[in-house]
Length: 348
Image (cartoon, rainbow, N blue to C red; front, side):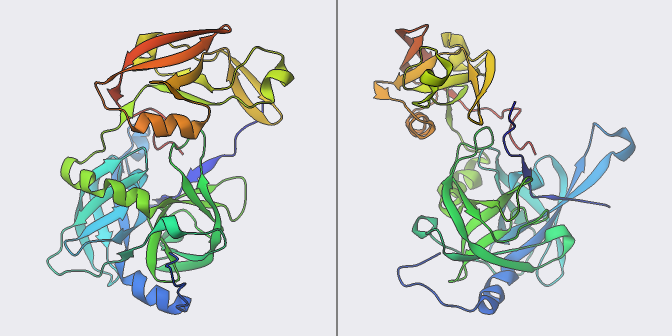
């Protein structure tokens, strides 16, 4: 069975944008403008699975975005932390507290407890990015504080099945463990992404959360501490048009349901997931489940179709879904739930 490329969350386990007019700032100037807003985060956590090493410290990066001490970072850096300490650009260490956490986007908002207003970074517009734009990552790889690496935007709207439902920025700017939560910046010295993943099986392939995705949830993180999202409780993938001919099974265009979460709206409505794993031309499929073809009459053909439609729903809403099972079309009704934290969230 082929294995999907592994990805690593970029926290370090310690021992103990292009504007309408392209910017041409030298990278040295970019660093001088952004670095004062980049911080080191030390999160002390209790590791219940290792009695002989009960306490451990996770080290990551973050970026100050407000004068009141708000810091944007990765959720996997601070998740489960008993205490948080932030080291400012000046070298001063200050305590911090968690404001909000979103395990789906892998974003967190914390606030440093300091009386003096720190430097803050300016947030850019990730929708203006183009493949080939020059970018730089600033953070604390392997504990080396205030390190800057440069590269380009290698790809946009990257979806990583099984890891995220949100599009990511791909970059070849070298990023390493400890860079988690640090900013990806453009030549205008604006933050256009938050670094989150690197590929374990390739060189110079890293991923950042687009800053526009972060900006869209900041208010809710501040006000509620979490993000309320609609959830049907299934995972799947597009039925490739070549698949029926290759495996000789009666598949129709749609969204192949591979996994139905226990206790989810989809399970309660009777949807079925896959039972047989096969690899077709290097792609892994879990066959035997239903094929989702429509939600509320809207055709569903791709992962993006599914994600886009589900985002329009509200927890508590009753919706009609159309599926194909054993070659026969049928309709089911389910009640949308609020997305819970799933076992797969924030897994390395």
